[in-house]
Amino acid sequence: MARLADPAASRVVLVGGARYTHLRPLPTVANNLDELAAILIDQTLWGLPPENCTVVRDPASPQEIDAALATASGSVRPDGLLLFYFAGHGLIDPLTGSLHLAVTETNRNMVHSTATPFEWVRRWFLNAPAGARVVILDCCYSGRATEGMGEPAAIADEVEIDRTCVLVAAPANRTALAPPGERFTAFTGVLIDLMRNGVSAGPPLLDMDTLYRRAEQTQHARNRPLPQLRARNGGERIPLVHNLAAVTGTGDGQPEPVPPPLRIPMPRPGDVFTPAEELDYDEETGGPYGPVVVLAYDQRIGALGVRLGRPVPRPPNEVLTDARLATAVGPSEVLDGGPVSGVVLMIAELKRGARGIPGARRLSGALVALPLSADPELVAESVRRAWVFTGYLGWRPGQLEAELAQRALIPSPEPLTSWLDRQAE
Image (cartoon, rainbow, N blue to C red; front, side, top):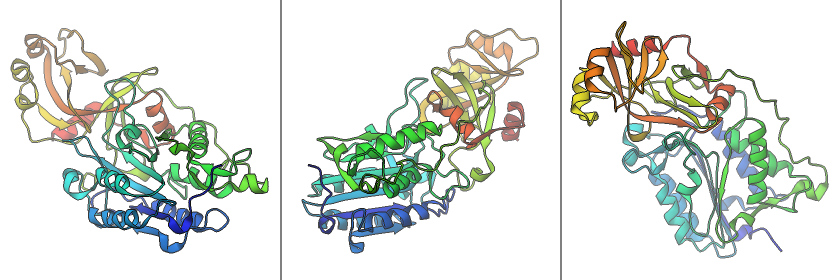
């Protein structure tokens, strides 16, 4: 029969980044930490001794998180639970593709040296003697997009740890982490409601699988990114708290009323989207999005696009493998198109009356998405100017629509031409 881990033998590390020097602030993360700590310490839910719950607020350096993990993993006992929770910005090392957890001084241009590698978390968990281990991540996984236009890469696969249950907020590369007007971040808010209020018709103890499945149902109903769970050796059956709804018969097991999904127009290639005012992008601090343009869209497959406004000091002939194509497009601007590296995409403006280029996809007016396989002679004849993008953004089926519904992104009143002209100035 399942039972809660011994609170006296357990250790919990709750980490949250609400304030950043170079990244967008996430003020509701502070509320996450306060409420989660209160739930775990509550005698009616679990009864963790306060001294066994380490709360790391706005860590200034990666070493601050590492030190908290070292202490917790070294003092947890075999009959206890080791739990690590992180809410904040998640960034990807562009060279290795590995997940890093942002701290106050993290710089997205120096992720490898200014953020906490998730590998550090993995290392402490693998060495800990705890009989039960849980990792919960509520962060934007801003470098792991879809592979091409297919299924999204799974965060949970990237952060899986042997003998550990890992629950992550979303499977894709961007998440509307803190919806405007809500007290908690989107995913953690659901967990808090479930843990605090209980699940009717649920088990006496709320285990990871129950929390995951109910959170998934709620997020799906709200048209929000879906969580993922990875567990080995029965880790999904690790209980966290008593199910108060099962004990009292009063809880309904559902968080606040679920609003109906919003109807939104279908995105089209050539559409430009910018962050909503509440999630405004700042080129100095680096928001999770910035302006983006959709290059390809299929409701069944997903969408692909690139970021705008991030020039890279490189000439086209260093990016394009076909020297003839680089010559054909002339002195084009090179831009950082997104966190998924190793892929080059192009936008071109055709000359008036120019012949069509096979494989080119119309975006807006004379602008097309130009295939790298285009005939260089035809490109030289037909293209007035071009923009070269290194990297891209991907959306799984329904994800871009969900971000529009949540107003994480809003349609830009300016056409694509204006954005491209602006960054060329």
